[in-house]
Length: 79
Image (tube, rainbow, N blue to C red):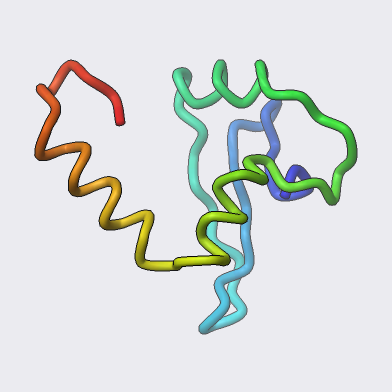
């Protein structure tokens, strides 16, 4: 959710589902540019709703798609 993204501070903070602890992930410059270009409508809105919907339908499908993409791509291609 956008509420977990702090573009100005450069962190994504999320509560871990297993431990309940807050986990911080730094936002690197390329990710910052990507996130800044996304539309924001509400703080509780999902950052990538289409990806969240895919994950809800098939949690292991994202891993399979990533592996297939990487197997077909050169290092310069982003999946």
